[in-house]
Amino acid sequence: MMDLSIRWLYILIGLAYLLFGFLLLIIRSSSRQVPGPVYWATGCFTGGAGMLYFSLFPWPGEFFNILFSNFLILISYSFFHVGILKFKNRKFRLWLIFIFPSLTILVNTLFILIWDLPNLRIAINSALIAVSGFILAFELLLPFNKVYRKIFLINSFAYLSFGLIMITRAVLANTPLIRHLMDNNPANLMILAFSAVLQAVLTYGYIIMVNIWVSEDLKMQVELRDKFLSIIAHDLKNQINIIGGFSDLLHNSALGYTSEKTVQFSGYIRQSAIQANALLNNLLEWARVKSKTEMFHPERIKLSRIIQEEVEANSFIAFNKGIDIKFVNSHPDLEVMADKNMLKTILRNLIINAVKFSNKGGDIQIGVSVLVEFAEVSVSDSGIGIKPEELKKLFNSSSMQSTEGTGHETGSGLGLLLCREFVERHGGKIWAISTFEKGSSFKFTLPL
Image 1: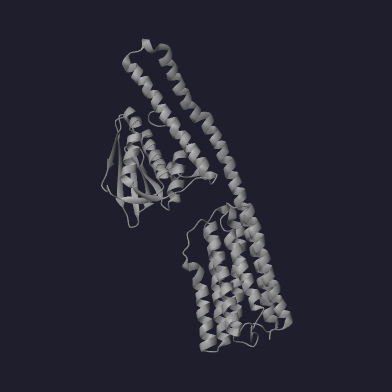
Image 2 (image 1 turned 60 degrees about the vertical axis):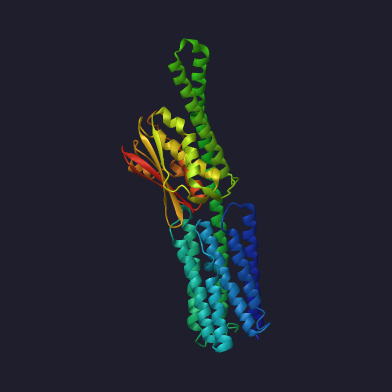
């Protein structure tokens, strides 16, 4: 039987895990937009349940107690790993959660039911926990936003230390220092004490990570608010002033102008109205994205039909500059999984952007190609191109700026950021290839 003192130590550590889980859930409830805390809390709950279950040893039997307690402890580290990946906005596979817990089931079954080798069982289970800790430490050292560098290093050091402790336990499993995990000896007590301290450090680190995320998000929201105000005050107001100015000229002196002049002025009005409408739509879409209220409804869509609709909708802007938009429909029946409104917004912004930076009489080509699991759409122009130093900043929200077009068109720099948000929402990628003074090609992918 387990000594009373070591039993209560397991119970206290298990209760501490549960307390840490509740703390993370409280953080989660006040910061629902932060990815990660719910997985960390789940990890604390499963780890705490494993420790509490192990404190009941040998109930309801040595095999079941050791099997399920190790399973719960290892799956807790899987949830910690998934939480870090979610926090870093990285994808994860479902097998990642169950690979180490599945291994511990195999180990305990082999070395309890088939071969009774407790020391080897302790060594392998300790090694599995150690490897889980080392993986988490490595994940926290991978490049990420520099504002998290210090707290990531602290958490990485904690996981590394925990892994080394488990490796030490694995080595000592075949020595008199650890004859059994339930023995009330200094080695077991020190391992448990260090584990409790490191878990407290990690929980504190997770809370700090959430606070930094909220702080950075608030800072970004303030910057975006200021940018919105400047766009409304300058770019949108400028388009409205153009519409108002030419409308006044037509209204006050329509009879004094030739029909060619009237058509020219009405063309200016229409072009400014289209640009103002596009800018206003971008503002509204971006506001929905950043307020987390945008609706994402992917469905099977015939790609060529949506492209053709956007080419026709923006043909007048191209016509005013004598630009020909050519859509090479090489895959007329190709279907993609996409949100129709988001896809139209992406295409509209890329077409308008291509027209803006094309010279009069130029041409724009839109093409579609098929990759393994994605469709690739390209919008290419023969315009003024982009300088290499500017190309790196195109999809960066921190360097959002407008460049005047070949026809003195203004803009907000918001359209490309919106394209990036929507393409990534679909699980695709967007990028640009450009040669200065020769033209640019913007490409993005969508899942088939």
